Image 1 (cartoon, rainbow, N blue to C red):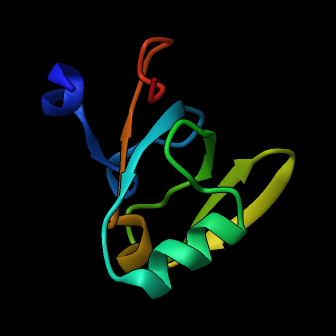
Image 2 (spheres, rainbow, N blue to C red):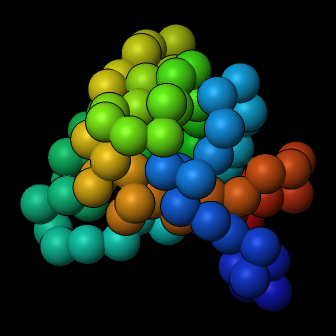
Length: 86
């Protein structure tokens, strides 16, 4: 996991960027909720809308999801093709 230093939260990613999920931080509830929506380590996400405040719109596995900024701050992501979890 030497690439973890290059990770950032989903709330910091600009619209139009594709990223890979590295980790979902938080309790069982948030981790289970994100997993149910397909936001799991290794999944590719596309940030569709991120105005810098309020909810983000992401695309994951062909579905569009709205995430609150607090939720997005708990999702660590990384850009690049080598960013997926092995």
